[in-house]
Length: 202
Image 1 (cartoon, one colour):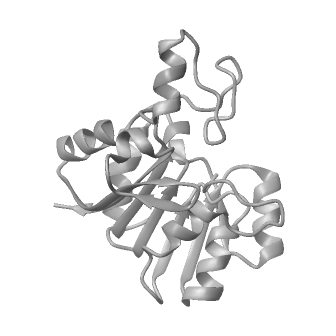
Image 2 (image 1 turned 90 degrees about the horizontal axis):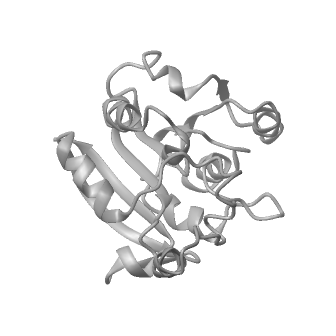
Image 3 (image 1 turned 45 degrees about the vertical axis):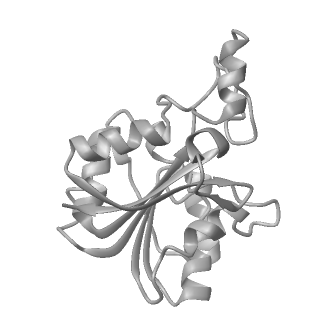
């Protein structure tokens, strides 16, 4: 998963904005790493190391082709494979909304990584609100599916996620919205198509 890469296989503008949150030289675990473009960028440009986790066969092959270390397993099975603070940073980019065990995986992200970075489509973005007011489910660049064929089984907003983090005793170190690669910090819950949170265990 890990966000939407560009057609040339390079990280998208949103992914590049998220990459800036990852300290140089970090040991990274990318949950739902997709084709590995983001992790490959972090290794190449920010001196990081680490692993991706992915279940899709084609994405696993793409990671291998990029030289990205990838572990193939289902995130619904949890992260018992990894000890506490095994990584400096754990990424969940466009992964959380696909998981049935989303709350558990959020807590596990903060357990396995000293820092967790989570990003997901922001259902509070104003075009989504407008679509619902018109009686339709939104279809946008970040939420491109029709209601009947979407892989997203969760929808949430920046405010929803902040409440969930507090409920699970997670400290939010930074949060903002993203719109076409640009950080949105003023009224992001309405103005941004993607939510981004940097967090750790309290």
